[in-house]
Image: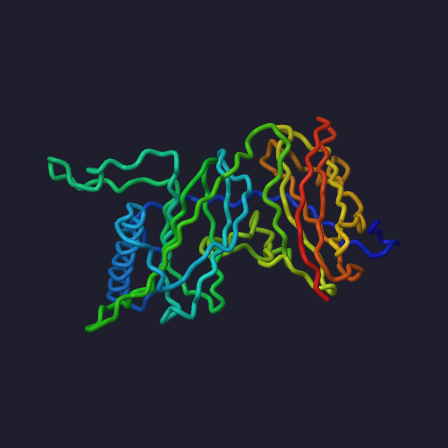
Length: 360
């Protein structure tokens, strides 16, 4: 067993009560706030250019969704991964990461449009986007998630954002476009664009069954020294409760000089009061001869004696586990960690598994 006096010193387990940051779906057209412009004219020029980008992206997704044109691939974009965490009002908070080939963009300025469409919803009527007989302008279709924003694409092409969706199956459209200049230029080449269509099935965490969020295998878990602004939170969706930043591992690979970190939330608890939960961890090493038991960690215990005195589900608190072990005694190779959550109040159990790799 990994204990303070055993093979290794287990990393001190942190516990925190983190409310998932709420997100509000934005309907188009949307213009994200820009840095303070030098004068009103520059602001107006920028707004007009942004509106052109918004229109181009919305029309692009409309056309691809209707199979009227293929998805452009001038700027390749892939879905690197996502996680599901219980959100507010029966919705699920979905932080996700995109892998964008930033080398294909002429400049870092980028317009990003994300639209989620329920696969069970009826298709919009053909006349929905046309004027009615009285000549009134049509209302734009409403989607479960519809958001446009502008930012500078990082050099590594890794972009993390988030959505909030009700349980169900969705097609998610992610469209990228080089941001237009404030003033259109003569003989300006067409802006490069990219579009990704990805299907997700959003789980329901509101039931009484014992359940957990998607485990986040992390390279770091860090407390924040100061709260983020709304725009900073938008660009850093793996910041929870305004107090804790989690850095997900993209490849699930760790050095023996580092540590294995995992973060998740436990659901299916009473509507009020404190839980009585124990989580046990067993590590298995995958060898040429087959998988072999390696070791186990000291269990985590969450109850009235270990949680903060003010912890109460009725106050909206969530049970969050942050678990970690140093890897200095792990031989290089592939591992599976099996963890069992036991709700001692109900007697229910839930077992989950994640895999990771240790490199020397």
